[in-house]
Each structure stands twice: as C-alpha cells, then as structure tokens.
Length: 336
Ligand code: NDP
Image (cartoon, rainbow, N blue to C red; front, top):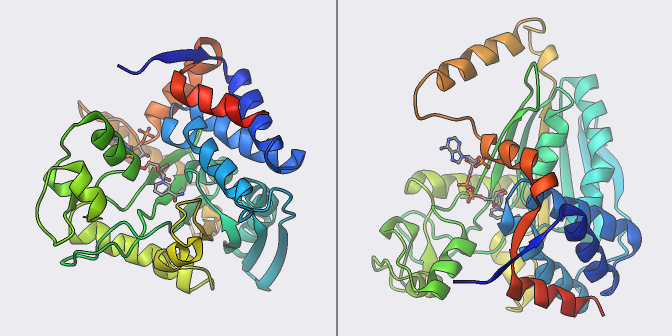
C-alpha cells in the first residue's frame, strides 16, 4: 500500500507555487496554475492536481514551456476570438479569454475561442464551469498525445481528447461533464501497470492489434476509444476542431514537436459558448432543463455528472486531502 500524507488545500497551493516559482514561472503564471491545481485537489480530481506538477516543472526545465507567458487576445471574426498563449501553460490564457468570450457570446448569441500556442495538461471542467456559471452553455475540446487507435486500427493516432460540456442551472452551480474520448484514462492504465492489475479488454490493444488485459501491453500498443468506434469518432472530431480548424497541432504533431521527451503536449483548445437566452425560450429554458435533470434523479441509482466533484468540494476545505508521500517528496525536491 502506498503511504499517504494529509495536506490542507492552502498547503497544496503553497507547494504548487513554490515548485513553479523555483522553476521559472513568474508569479502571475504560477498563481494561475496553482489555483487550477488546488481546485482539482479540492474536487478530488487527483489526476489533474499535484500529480501534474512534475509535468509542469518538466516543461519549464526543458525550456519548452514559457513560465513568463503573456497571453494576448485578438478578434478573428465578430464571434471568433483567439488567445495566443505565448507558449505558456493554459491557466493564465484561459483567464485572459474568459470575459471576452462571455461578452462576445452575449452580444452574438454564440461565440468561439480558439486558444493556440499553449500547453494544456489539465482538466477541462474548470474553464467550462467558470463560463456556465455565468449563464452560458459551453463546449470545450483539446487534443493531447497520440495514444488512441482509430476504429479498426492498431496504432495510436488520436489523443485521449477530452470534451467538456456545461449547462447553467437555476439554483446552484452549473451541470458540467468532462470526459476523455478513450475508454480509460492513460494515468489509470499506468497505475494498473505499476500495481500489477489487469485492465478491461476494452481499454486497449497490443502493438499488433491483439486483444489484451495486460496494461503493459496496452501501453506498448494503443488505447481504444470509449464505446468502440463512437469514442474514436469523438477523438477524431476533437483533432479536427481543436487542431486542424484552429491551426494547431494534431496529437501526432504534438508528439513530433515533443521529440519523444514525454513532456506536456503543446497544442490548442476550442471553447464554444452559447447564450441560451438568445435561442428562443429565454424565460423557459432553465425550468425546462430542470425537468430533465429531475427526471434523471427520480430514477434510483442515478446522479448528475459533476455531483461527485461538488460533494468533494464541500468537505475538502476543512478535511484536507491525501497525497502519496512519494509525490509529496518529489514536489518538495522541486522547491529548492
Ligand atoms: P471520468 O470517466 O471519471 O468522468 C467523466 C464524466 O462523467 C465526469 O463529468 C463525471 O462526473 C461523470 N460521471 C462519472 N460517473 C458518473 C455517473 N455514474 N453518472 C453520471 N455522471 C458520471 O473522466 P475521464 O477519465 O474520462 O476524464 C478525466 C479527466 O481527464 C477530465 O477532466 C478530462 O478533461 C481530463 N483529460 C485531460 C486531457 C488533456 O490532455 N488535457 C486528456 C484526457 C483527459 P464526476 O467528476 O462528478 O465524477
């Protein structure tokens, strides 16, 4: 069993800041990343919390990621914005893009933000939630590295390419789901390999396309999309929208750019925001949506996406979180 240690969220933030500042981030960039990291730990999304700091630090140390990035925004069309991330990490650029995107969506009914020249190693729900909390309906997409085979193929081509969706609610935080296109997160397969556990046959295939439950064979081969060809098509869509359309890397190009170093993937993100009050039922859409959500919850065994995170968010500020001691030690080593 891995030894765990307890941390308060303030300590998570302070440790993240210390790691980032000691490795080339300026305070503004460090603050934006530390805020995202702390949010992830607070919502018990450990795969995008402190676990990712070594990736952030690795990108800074190799010189690929700009820790002093100054993202800037431009209008490409009346309802299309672009944030140039200045080769930095996504959180600061996402902050820069949020208000202009929301304003543009309110003005036009719909608006899109193409986020380029940045490194995204986080979850999508923070940016989706921030916009949906302002009453907008939101989609977000980002590619990553080529781990997922196309349907029927045997070589990794698509990223694990997540898609996030947000819907405003009448009372309380918005409904948000945020899911990868792959059947299993890569981190979960790596953990299964480390701990000697099998993975489901649906998780991936071996280098020659063979069926396997051995996580090491999947890591040497390719992951599969969720629901077979359906997840693969989702992953393909994300490559086209958040890669080809916005002039950014496909996942295969991100891997070429990285040169096999395995650092954070460079690329883009596309966010679409819609103002629901401009779609013909301004007084009814919220109640109408609630009707669906209530009907879901009326069935035993259901919950809404995001409910697990919201429950965690209520308890972690007081109770704190648990972190593997080995990770804690690694992070302490980055602070000097
Ligand atoms: P999960 O499969 O754990 O969850 C996906 C979504 O489904 C979540 O919104 C979750 O809500 C919801 N959900 C889970 N169980 C239920 C249920 N029983 N009923 C209703 N809803 C449910 O996530 P993934 O492994 O697919 O992705 C994890 C994260 O990895 C995402 O945040 C994604 O953005 C990120 N990612 C980032 C990449 C990058 O390159 N930046 C690449 C790939 C993934 P809840 O959170 O409340 O459980």
